[in-house]
Amino acid sequence: MSPANSKNADRRILVTGASGYVGGRLVRQLLTEGFTVRVFVRDAKKISGQPWFSQVELATGNANDYASTKSALEGIHTAFYLLHSINAGTNFEEVEAAMAKNFAMAAEASNVKQIVYLGGIANDEKISQHLESRANTGTQLASGKVAVMEIRAGIIIGSGSASFEMLRHLTHRLPIMTTPKWVSNRTQPIAIRDVLWYLTHAAGLEEPVSGIFDVGGPEVLSYAEMMQTFARLSGLRKRWIIKVPVLSPGLSSLWIGLVTPVPTSLARPLVGSLISEVVADPKRSIAAIIAPPKEGLLPLATAIELALSKVSAHDVETRWSDATAPAAPWQKAQGDPDWAGDTIYEDSRERVVDTQGEYLWQAVEAIGGDTGWYGADFLWWARGILDRIFGGVGLRRGRRDPDHLRVGESLDFWRVEALEPGKSLRLYAEMILPGKAWLEFEISEVKENGQVRRKVKQTATFQPRGLGGQLYWFFVLPFHSLIFPTMLKNLVKAAEGRKAK
Image 1: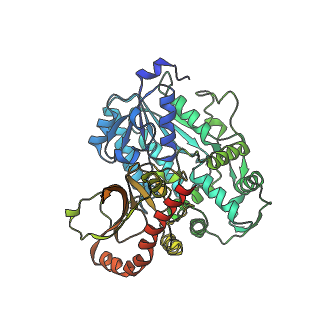
Image 2 (image 1 turned 180 degrees about the horizontal axis):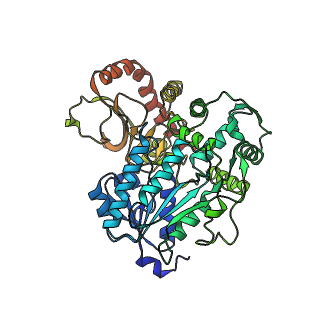
Image 3 (image 1 turned 135 degrees about the vertical axis):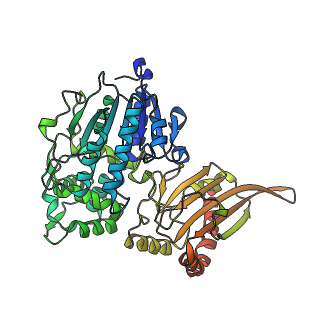
């Protein structure tokens, strides 16, 4: 296909999961190929920072809701189903099945011609709960009359993917490791570039296609071999891997959650998948429908090198953490107004300085990740560890880019909720909390004695949930006196340092 292919412009494509790792990249690819793209999201604000935001049609709603799903599917030729509910709790299989069934019914009622679903290879008899649920999702999507092309992929390797981050951090941080037996299981990893190749070409098929198709890279190897390959390409010594039989999937998930940026809740299905052999079935080859790239599928070493180069160049387009983490049961919907019934607690501080607004904004936008939180970092670190212990995301998610943020992306255990360049940044807390929390920075101009100066305002807001939330606020209040004054002072100091460069 080519961007100049005018035929594609007449075909309207729907992408669900556009705020996620694969979906965000697929939208860009489809636009490059000239398709008319509509995205179906719960909250348009969460993708407003994407470079393609102004080029797509927007449909808002929930895939569990028939009316909004049907509305999003009206006039669509091909719909990409990239949704999952692996973090929805112990009943995620039922949630996924119901959502897929609803989507199939709405697609049929809207006269959609083709559904393309991205699942995971599930050919082993010892199939994990996660892979079994993904396979059942495909079954539910195919329960209607719309043709469903189910593309099952192996472990996806690319900058920002959860599988890549898990591989990278395990290899970097553990030169000697005791590992469960599943590191010897066979896998068939595939580069994100090649996954996108198949998905994008599926959008341009002449006729609807039904069936299950496996896609994997050109090599079949063990996870241990993948780690050794990563070590070699990263200039690390060979890793010593000692296999032990006592590390269950649950223990392995906890271990990965503590060692890597991938939280335990996401590590669990990833580990579950590795317990099975994830190898493509030649009988389900996609080659007869979509030929591979002319240059061939990327081998693992090339995929890793490409991913590492993207990370080094700070050119990571999407990350596994881009999809919003689900709210805890005690949390209400993000963005509830003050009058929703809860008390609002605030810690607000401000400083008026002579530093230029440009440098102040650069310091604000660089917060988190390797920059840290401008003081008392040991307390932030401790809070991140505590969050990890209780199953939260912790601080290790870091940031996509060291200098620039965009709305909707993750930042350590925060998410960028609102951003106005040069003026304001509002972060929403995704750490485990008995309530909801925000951290906001605002830069404005003030006049003092005829002189224009800049005011930096820093506000931490907490909306407690019940008595437990209120007790939590007063428990952490003493720590605020250590964290927040230091944060504002060092932020201004960092801005002044930028001016001096």
